[in-house]
Image (cartoon, rainbow, N blue to C red; front, side, top):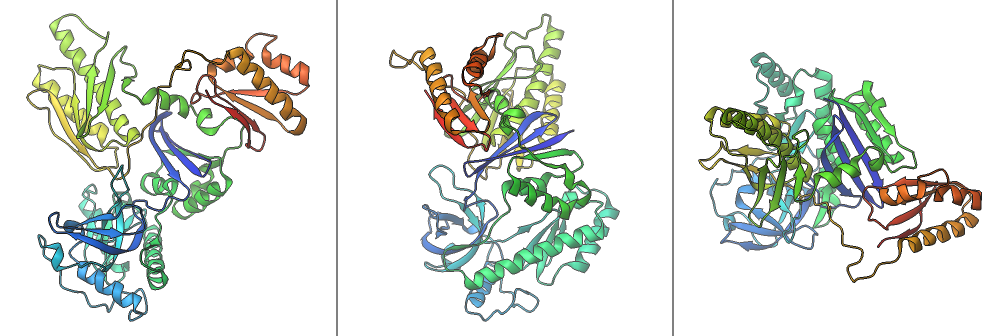
Length: 519
């Protein structure tokens, strides 16, 4: 499988698209100044307790207080609490945990009022970003994630991913990590560590220890509430969790980000740093790699199933859950045996697309799927196994149940950030009964171009809807050619799938917006 990472930076925001064999599977948007990202560490102050919920609300600087449940405190909460107090008071002079006195573990099903009080300071980690009206979800059980390892303070154990099945390899990894891990820390060995050399694992461990040292320094000098450690940007996080031999290219249109990613890959895979490429063409990066078109096709209530000859999905989001209905459309067969085989075939194609949709939209919570009815029990089992196989590439935690008596498959999927929403419908241009005549819009474009040519000496690019692009460029004596003959300057016209019908933007060679209009 060929993987490509497309990263577009525009207007203080990064869009990150993960393509697998040219198809869009994941989309992430991240603001440059996003202060509350999963994995970030904070010092927070307890604002109030909620005994009825066995939880507390903690101020971390967000408009809504973060939610801390008793089960998210972790068994070593009292140790973390003492470490923070000693660090702030300068009693703890360094980041080493070698001689730090570990406190008694808290009860597994205890009462939050017995271990935490109002105005207490706590060190915490974001586990779920703010969603809708809810503040962040947090935990006081800290973990620092690297490429191969996860470092856990105040833990002694070495755990190995269950996906590493080879007993000899498990023993090799355990022996190796126990020999290099610092005292006072526990380690989780990730699946990607399988077969890795000592030097790679040791380097990853050193980077995690450096993270902890930076955290300690910030704990000493930062006020409450404040951030003490930032998670990597989304692009680097994707590389950390997904980077493997399947990646053939990483393309970005921001030079600084390109340098940062090259430096990161040079650390984890120096022989492959050249796969990171800088994109500097006039056509927007997402448009050039067909991402904008795929977004329009993949979002919305109705989604066509590729290669199914008419079958489609209906995806709806209710307050409690997501519902996915599989429809065969005009894709039908005659004969009972043929119908049964046909239903299985369509359902398997639907399962493949559903697995993609869950990743692309980052749908979480409860999901109920209504597949086409199948009488054959063996077919139902085959479909369920196929769905599980397709979902195996999903990094988010999920669990699926076998088809119910009604033929429904129920599943849950971890939700750590707001669901992706891409609007695929547009308001009708003549909602009030009148619209600006298209010819007038074209005249305004020409007027803007004429005025711009007088002051802009470099190249000019006109971004428009594909229909408008066709109108301006088709035929030997097109409007585009007429502009050239009239003003002695060529205007490059670029179709944009994401634009409304009458929307346009005039861009210079430095990718600066000169003029724009939207209906």
